[in-house]
Length: 164
Image (cartoon, rainbow, N blue to C red; front, side):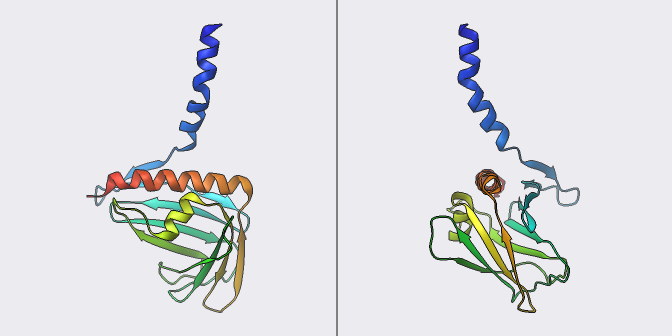
């Protein structure tokens, strides 16, 4: 009976440890370790957070045809419990595949405000504005909010160990 009680006592810790399983791979050319959350599916797209020793890349893949983004494209991010929106520009290359990047410098210091919010606040939805001024809304459901927040927080914490 005591052993069952002890197992049940540690079971929540075991479940939490499983939630933060990052993909870790070594680049064959640079020999650098890269971390990734893998793709998290959202309503209207998906997101992955990747990190190496230099940067943390939050990549949104927006579904649909003719989603062109360049360095003038923007995203308005709405967080739960915050009335104001956060705005950011695309930091990736020009593309028409629906790929939108937020790129942050990887350092041992506190992350930037936007990255800090992605790690600690639930994203309700994002409005992407392409180079043709057409807006696309990507909604984030309750389960996806939790998963994204946990994985992003875990990855940012682990990414600090990669800084040289």
